[in-house]
Length: 291
Image (cartoon, rainbow, N blue to C red; front, side, top):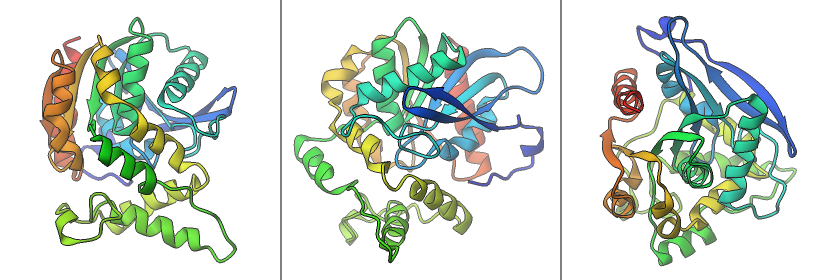
């Protein structure tokens, strides 16, 4: 995802690195303020099916006042694959905590988008002593029927073949998530109105997903199966429920809020353009800075 805007040159430099855990190397992006006093480290967890690359607009802006570490979930982006054949969200939470241990990060604020939000919530439940503030950006709350259908259809394992049919499948999968919700219901009733991102942004996301063709679905299905009704009420950390105004999961905001009545709420402008990303980052920063 390429960023643009008049202030990009003054924003912190974003670097890439790896840290070794039992499964192999976990990839992350990191940035820190160019100067001045740093606030508490912010750990960021991305949405499925891509990688921390999708968080670049927010990383650049939030790192103006704090160190940011944005991990690629195991099986996504450039991180190693998970060890279990069917990992659950608790496993991914533990893997992230082990990566942070290896980086020497003991206490932090935590942001998670979609699948990353499920993992972030589970981290906050498991280690409330380490998580000071929690932002859940775009949390779903599927009915039993929705969950069963999505587990069956949303993120299947895709076989690789010598004709490259997987390339065509992943291209349409990535593109169609912007056009329909869920992506496989390609009819007027399920059409989205957000439009496609730029050709460059679409290509970049496609490449990130294609890199993880063998394992992209593991964290996705773990998040779909994760029981929000059972787990979210266990979050005791200071929390913000954030939803972008163009997020297809915005419809679930009231239901999620009922499970977390102590959490603050915020509808953001998203990150489609530099100006909107500025506004969204400012809203998230205002919450974090009060902790």
